[in-house]
Amino acid sequence: MKQRLKFNQGFSFIELILAIALLSIVMIMISGFMSSTSAQFGKTKKNINVQSSAQTTYNQMCDTIMQAEYIRVCPKTSTGTRASYSFVPDNYANYIKPETEARRDVILDLSTYKIVNKMGTPYPNDALTTDRETIGTVYSFRMFKQGGIYNELPVDYIYLEYMAPNKTGNVRNTETGGEWADDVKTYVIYYFKHNKIYMYRTADDPDGTPSPYNSYDECLAKVEALVAEEEEAAEAKYAHLSADEAIRRYKGRELATHVEDFKLSADAVGEALVLIMDFDDSGYKFDLNTTVRFRNTNVLTAKPQLTKKLKNPGEPAEDEEEEDEE
Image 1 (cartoon, rainbow, N blue to C red):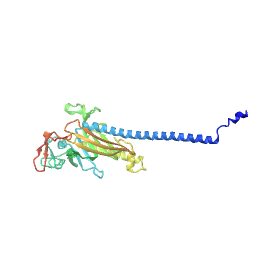
Image 2 (cartoon, rainbow, N blue to C red):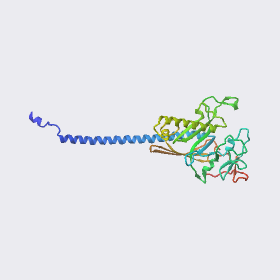
Image 3 (cartoon, helix red, strand yellow):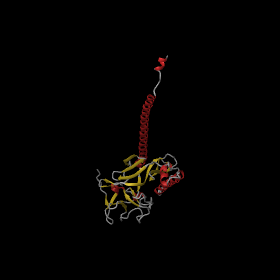
Image 4 (tube, rainbow, N blue to C red):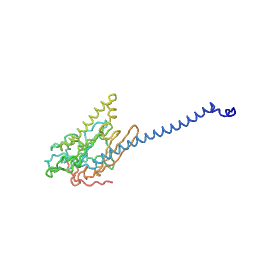
């Protein structure tokens, strides 16, 4: 009996310390592996979220831009404020004319890329007609691409018009005896502010049918009102933060968030826009640079046989010749 007890004395203190030390080392290794895996999963999820947001934004904008029949882009200045000029299609002079007025000649001043009348006076407010737009200076989209080189400008807003299916069933077609219209004119505006892209579309607004002659002004006012509401709600929710930080954190009706930069270029002759967006969510970045081509022809340019070029004010306008594009 004494002999059996002699060989059943258990672990010594030193053996116990060594066992605990070895177990601690194993646990630390397992913990480090799990922590690294968790961190990598978090990074992957952030990257996927940024890319998904960029793809969703692109899909939405691409779908409407491709259908556009008219588009207008206003850039930002170097200080981040809205520029006093914007870019419009070559046929802008006919877009803004009253319905009672005859078709105007499409004339481009190649020295300034402005749309002008026969006397070389720029639109809008050419002093010879009554136009339905009276603000700002307008330039042709041809200014973006010169000599094969694309110029990029920061975006304040993109406004466009296109025909969409009549989903609400409350719009009649007066041209067909008052029958329900299959397609209705839809007005959309994308507005870039607070590192977010906001979208307003009349098809999503029960009271969103604007006057045909004030559609641009009304849509701009609508999206600015939407952003003002978001700013007020953000300041109320995050009263302890600055106004800029509050609106950044606030989740509202924006189309896209974490947009660090939004620029645009255009190939007028090629009938295409180039969208350039940089997404950045806490250091997780994704750059989107893509070309969107219009389905309709002559959206940015007028038909060559209808376009004339004004080389110098006072000189007669010349018929446009086809430009060779690589």
